[in-house]
Image 1 (cartoon, rainbow, N blue to C red):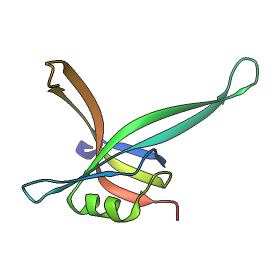
Image 2 (image 1 turned 135 degrees about the horizontal axis):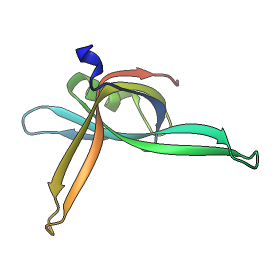
Image 3 (image 1 turned 180 degrees about the vertical axis):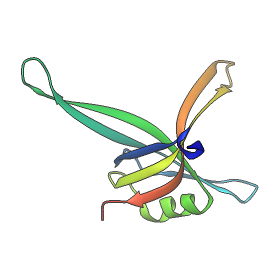
Image 4 (image 1 turned 45 degrees about the horizontal axis):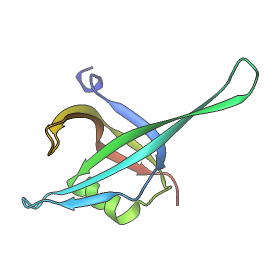
Length: 110
């Protein structure tokens, strides 16, 4: 059960083209966001679609696959772990980020 403690699985569409960053250490980082949609009917019977946006990061070989095959609009299945971090802007403002570190990727659209 240890592998289930921090596991995220999402299916959604890329909201933009991935941002690829080649670090000085030689590692490759891919950053992108995906949208997941959930539909339901409200009290008046109208169909409502709720869209949630998720920040995704991928490293190494997974980042290379992202760079080669993914573009805005593509549907993907992501598996990874949820992480939170904070950083300080150049003006001294503290910001917080929650993202999914992707360790498995399945391309669903052609």
